[in-house]
Image 1 (cartoon, helix red, strand yellow):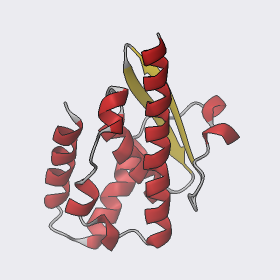
Image 2: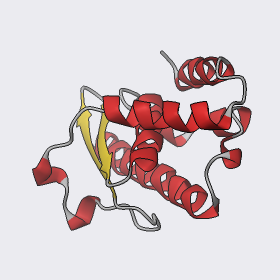
Image 3: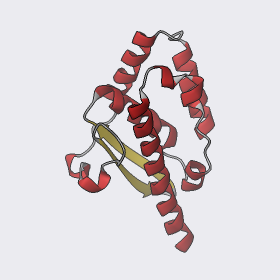
Length: 143
């Protein structure tokens, strides 16, 4: 699936919650619980996302020209947010990640249920994922 197809799928899932704040927050936390367990060896200072109030770890690897992400957080809702981004970006080519226009957050009106601090942290996660993609794209270009 493309990044936009995945975003549309997420928008559709959240539309089923009909804007119910409590159910939406619960659903995000549930998504975090379903996130694959991140290896403890990857929970390093280097993989900590700067700018997040919670602790957020993101690791990436390049496999067959596509980027795959692992992530975790020490808080349930932030872990859910990490899982959404991993779902959107993992398995995509670096170029697709770099050129992506993330719109699902606005469509699901995420600002209603995450505060300013978490919004800043979410932006930091996106930035980190795009930096990984840039590094991998540079690596592919040199190969």
